[in-house]
Amino acid sequence: MKLKILLVTALLVAIHSAYAQSVIDLIRQTPSYASCNYHTYPDSITAKLTPAPKGKKPFYISHYGRHGSRYISNRNGYDTPYIMMVHADSLDELTAAGQKVMHEMKSIMHDTEDRWGELTGYGKRQLQNIGRRMVERFPEVLCPGANVTCISTVVPRCIESMGSYALEMLQACPKLNITMQASKRTQWYMNYQDNKLRKKYMTPEAKKAYDAYVKPRLGNSRLMEEIFKNPDIVEEFVDEEYFTYYLMKMALFQQNISYNRNPHLIELFNTDEFYRMWQVDNALWYIQHGACKLNGGNQPYSQRYLLRQLIADADSCIQLAKPGAQLRFGHETVLLPLVCLIGVNGYDLATDNLDELEAKGWWCSSVFPMASNLQFIFYRSNIKDKDILFKVLLNEEEATLPIQTDCAPYYHWSDFRQYCLDKLAAYKR
Image (cartoon, rainbow, N blue to C red; front, side):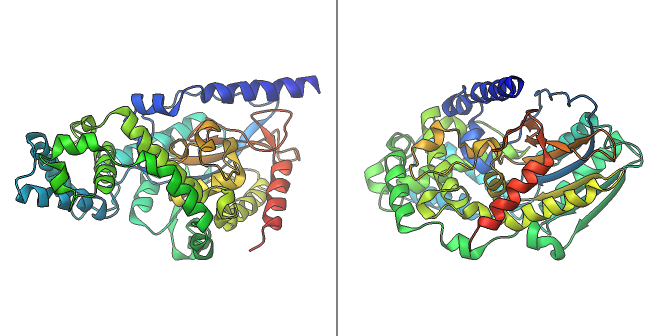
């Protein structure tokens, strides 16, 4: 019992150490962290993996990952600030700095035209790196002759991500047996969007709390004075809040694209301004997909079908001598609520106070950057071993679950399975 307490205590210390770095520190080091779901995946992973308990070896991998870095999904995010700039320019209301900003915006929009939502070259490299590391980290599972089943949503950037991942795995281990599929037949769990739940996320209580939270964090009079000659005149057609927000997004989004990663637009803003934008977005993502008490706390259940499928697939594969791996490629609007539903790293946080999110570690940027992924690694001593262990990797780093264990960061599959089934059974539509 003492050993169990020590292991759990050590793990909690590690978690608190990971959060010792504040959000504002992370944004200062990597500005794209402020852009939440536009955040870029780390170029390298340095986290060490804890050795498995004695006699246990990895034998099966289950995975759900987001596509890699992409172009912006539609032109609205760029048109919003650009049209305001063009109008101001037509009235000779742009400063020299404003003229330079508009030139940068034109260049970005020209490069992005007709590429809306497409996977970028940088995004392909992200998936290649993750696929290669998976083979290198778990050679017992991904060995010659192993079966790897890949399933993607029908969205092109996800299909390309799957292909990039699989081809790199074959480079690392040429004798893998890899199959790939993208079909509407699997959309019911791969990319299920619960419209009934979605309509209920912004309740009157949630809207009141959100509006109060974001009001002091929006707008940027300093930026308006830098870009426009007479901010008081242009305020008739330049919405300060929208202009500032979308220009910041435009600046940060370029970190996902190999072309034009010129930091000029990023340099328009300071760390505190990016930080306030992150707070606004983080709160909205929580209301939309977290266990927010302001709307009943049920939004994570949008991914109940995916969780049931993950459990069913694992139960089936555990019966096989060499199950290999099942890899799934989809979207952040699936991955984030799935993480919240399972309770990975405390993301099942339930609160009605948006000011608590940051202090309690509910930081969406750490969950779903471009190419983000959730990996379940299963362990046993042999096929007759009934005590199946597994651990969860969130973005390739060991994570915690809201259940007890005597072998952290490993958990007993039977405990987790029952926890999830009980939670799903308790859900009332």
